[in-house]
Length: 219
Image (cartoon, rainbow, N blue to C red; front, top):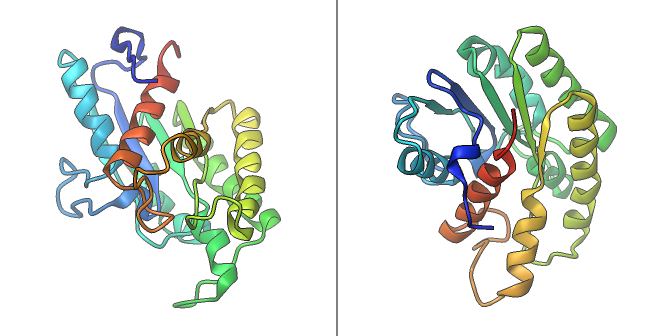
């Protein structure tokens, strides 16, 4: 998993990679300075890309926003995605859409699977229409520490929907959920997800490395 082959990455000078999602993407990003991508997997990706391919001039922008569901993404999609004109768009969303079934907060409610799929189509249609050439869809991950909880099992269907949408929209699908599950199962002594949802440093590293490995050989 960690045997990265940077020469096989598809990026070119001048590429702009925009990462979108919720708090798992956000992780304290600087709202005033896009060069400071927060402390999560986006920072891992940026650090590894810079270290492994210092010859490349690539801009990485993190526009994740804590607490977001698909409706919040739709509301800010033009400003925080389309208007940035990314060469690559990476999207991971869905945990909050499911989690709100436990109760609404700040006007947010649960997004049932058919509505989630409809919202995702709206986001992806807009991205395609605007001419974004490369789409990456990441699986939603986990909600709590019990991997077999009702909400984590519910997320499996949302993950499957993301996989099917990736096929439909000719996007790259990255199953970070299974990589995290593998790590949690094999090494339960490590605190991969301190609160069951948000990854720690090791968890974010797995997500970042998995993302890069999935891009190797893509043309």
